[in-house]
Length: 202
Image (cartoon, rainbow, N blue to C red; front, side, top):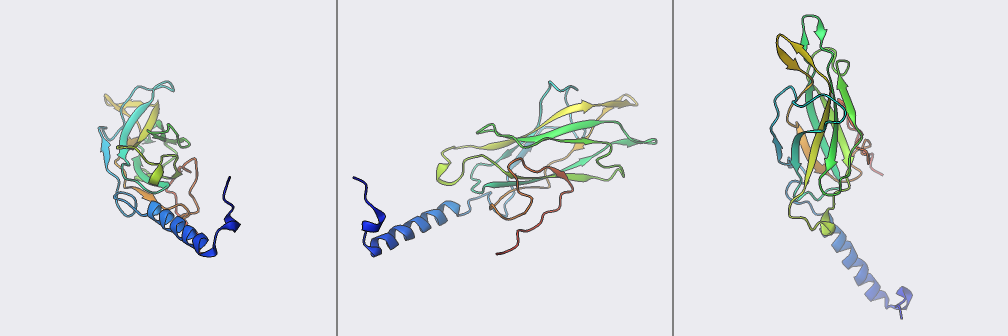
């Protein structure tokens, strides 16, 4: 027979609520790599990303090691540059997205082309992803990671050199608590030079 909460002494109910509060706080306690710590990143790419052109080809820019991440939001900022010549920006294009290596969950895609940085300066793509990766007491994995994927849509050869969008290592890759920024989204909300708006305190 189930025990009814209203049948318990008030002191026991209070103790149970306090235990629940402490467990919740323990689960949310930051671990290495979760707050104000950059997540380790591995890459094996050249500045102008490599790979065959075509929608059927998925390439990997690099992997973010999220082992120990105990925050529900991944904040990622990737620098990119559109190559150019004496005639202006080259007609090149790459599509980016992030994939959770545990659940297979993905962010929305963002396509970078010559209109993404017409002035030729280095810009950045920002993701603020409420990711599906397990954290806290639900995290039983010894290793976790996020894969940064891309497709090469267009290349241009200039002077015998093949060019497309150049993408560097993350300027920022970290975990943050849910409700930190207005722009947090389950699809990652990828944007160019995306400003972050702190959620107003209640």
